[in-house]
Image (cartoon, rainbow over all chains, first blue to last red):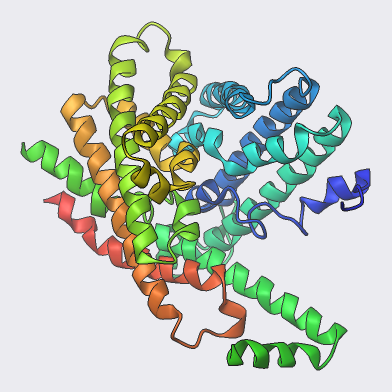
Length: 219
Length: 191
């Protein structure tokens, strides 16, 4: 049995080391679909953060009362309630962003990251630890969405949060705001992460990594 | 009839659920390793999409006019129950098929493509037959994307992939190229 993580670890691990989108590959649909600008990505991130925080609060509070057999349906119902609240709030306060995000607000319900945190963490831990975990994971999700949104907006529109950054002669690289750009952006982010990870390994133990490649090639 | 045909084509290739809307990416990444599994997954999806489409049409026509705020909650409940009932029926009627589908059947509940299909069908106000055409188009599109990806990945096993691109990175870049290719269908609908 692994040692129990400290509160600090619970809080920080979701942000980068176990980032839900970039490392665990959860919640990919919204991360790719609505990140064509920074503002859309941020709105989606905040809405998801709100739903994750409130669901974790409720699930960890009632964790002893929820019967084992119907726990998944209960979590889904709790999540769906908060998503409905988020949907109506966004529609009332920022109609343009609500229109841009479209059905993807409703799809927060089936974001596997949220259900995953309830099942793996909030249903087994105290309210305080679950909230720390929710905040950490939520911030990690926002970081990933902002990163994607920034890359796609800077390349696809030539702007950052709506401000032009290249001057008048820049010809926008349209493909990055279209669907293929989403796939390419996350593909290249993963390439960069892999490259970084390998470089760290090679520096830590010189000679070991090339040996492993030789074994993989032979196998 | 022409109307239904275009709804079908539009959902299948022009606005392909996986490559245009990024829906159902988890199974797309997870079970696209082999063509055989990809086909099975596609078939299971088409079945659940059909059931969900009928239920969503019923809810939208008879229940939601009285309680619009229940839309999301009722849809997700109906989809979860539909998947559960489907699972039990198949288990009873054809144990062989049940074993063949395995874990993929219950996982369809959290496939965002199903909820998106029901939600969009309700928002666009499709009638019963338009809803069915939309669901089948969506299912055919999902299957097409899965099988294409699986065929490419089967061949990828025999090619030299750069060390840092192994795993998910290369799959995403291939998906990007597939998505680029599917953008070629965009002109179909404007005529």
